[in-house]
Image (tube, rainbow, N blue to C red; front, side, top):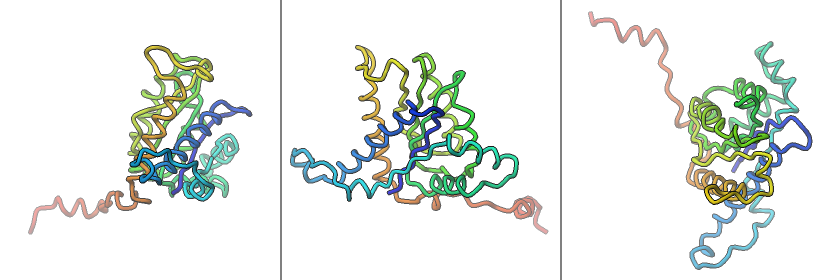
Length: 226
């Protein structure tokens, strides 16, 4: 199973990359646990996932900060370079995506949006996607719902119900009486993505692509019969 993590953090170390790593680890663990249904049905705690089980998930991290120049060149030349082309192929051929961006001025970063602009607009059709973001204050958390979720809905991806936002005060916090802590949100979102990945046939996108009817054939169908 191919899981791709797209992270648009610009600094190093990056809280965006940290959130991406925690989400990837949680999804990988959930998938490994789902491979032990007998233990769960018997009420036994499944053993820790071994290297072979974790390797079967194949998480791959794409750091967009390393591709910033390649993305800009692709815009002005119309052709992606080798590194960017490999990243686009990884996203296109993946079974699921974790997409994480920092929030600037109430929306996703320009680099994050630019990367998905150079990906074919049918590459994410029917693909499970977990969206997440980081920011300096919790006031920007709604950017997940008014910016990221519409973006992936436009690309016809299947976005998991729980989106994960981490403000500066969330790291190490336990939430309050009305909200879950960051750890609980990560686990809930990871479980939702793992369930979608487990029940989705690999590379099902090819079967879901629409058939394109040539424009000439559409015009011919409108002409009255002779």
